[in-house]
Image (cartoon, rainbow, N blue to C red; front, side, top):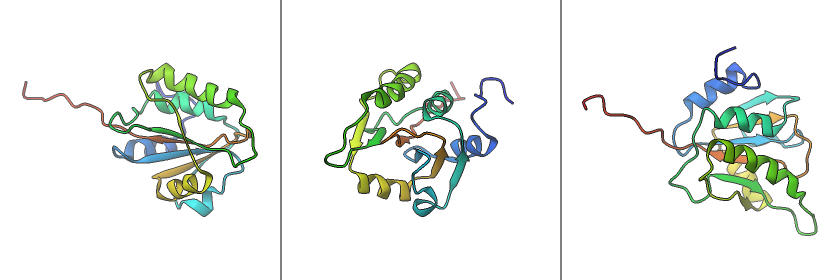
Length: 148
């Protein structure tokens, strides 16, 4: 355990977050997501729900302020309904750490899979809500000039 690092953040996930560069994306996938089919770097977070992971991750990582959509979720397939409480629970964690972040955007199912294939990593969670997958784009942390 580390001070300031949530217990749901494993050593493997902490390493991935550290190695990600600005503009890299990480997918927090529900338990049914085809993670291993989409990406070679899959981290297991079985039994952990996405809101808890968002809280732990967003305390350590800023969102890309240069992107109009640094937080994305899968859009429903035509005919499916969304449970608004899912996005609300996720947005509550975003607002806790990065309240000025743009609204969560929705992208089409297969476009979401394409993003997952290009993502830095996919985190397989214990989340079981429908359309519970989310992508976060890492931003730049301002560096203070040591000369001044």
